[in-house]
Amino acid sequence: MEKLHSIQTSDRVFDTRGSRPVLITCNDMNNYVCKYNMGNGTAMRLACEYIAASFLKIWGLNVPDFALVDVKREHIPSDFNIRGSYFDITCFGSKYSRDFADLNNFTDTVAPRIRKSYINRQELYYISLFDIWLANEDRNNNNYNLLIDINNQRNFIPIDHESIFNSRVMYNPICELTYDDSLISSQLMQKMFGLKDLKKLDKEEIKSNFYSFVNQCQGNLVSIVSQLPNDWKINKKELETKMINEIFNETWLNNSFKLLLFFLQINSNS
Figure (spheres, rainbow, N blue to C red):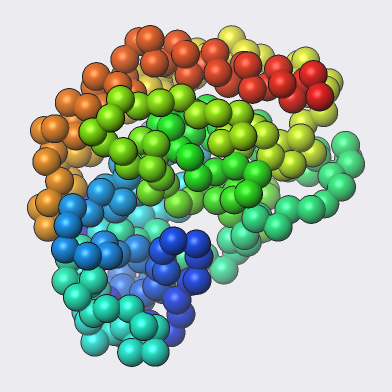
């Protein structure tokens, strides 16, 4: 993947929990929300972002376009209070759009007639299953990490994936999410889907698509990992081996789908 580079001083920093990405104008004349590695060690959080975004695209979910970005130190204002040295290595950038609105404060009643206006709401099932599969611990009732495209059929857009693989615990076996760690436990899911919706859910279709998407991800794994920048200091072969052994493991895949059904059953019971 060809790198982009910054062309002017940033005028915005996003004060999110944990990371403070900056808005960068790049040489393709688009703006990107750029995450950077904090420190001199392995940039695993950026690798997780890149891998998850690549997989989401294969799943056909509405991940923003993304790029590798070189940001010049002089394009980071001093009043951002971000170390210039953080930008000495490649950043991960997600394309910014004014049409994207944050969904973290979703409090609408969402009557049945309103639910139908979210014509792609079924994608929330796939986003939930994606998180279960990759053990993403940072999309739940406390933090949706979802945007909504207000001018394009109200599509849901998953963002922020640095907490996949149990928040980057790469040297321990991967662990299943709990119900409370999942998006399915959120008010969003409970308001978007009534009991009738859950009863009509085509589980076999989701299962078939899940295995198809996973197979495509595995088929593209070598190519995706190979594109991780060398300055991220990732042991690519080790990362590739871990993913093959764990997230593409048949038992893990079967359990991931069963866990989705179990979490949905909890919602049905309540």
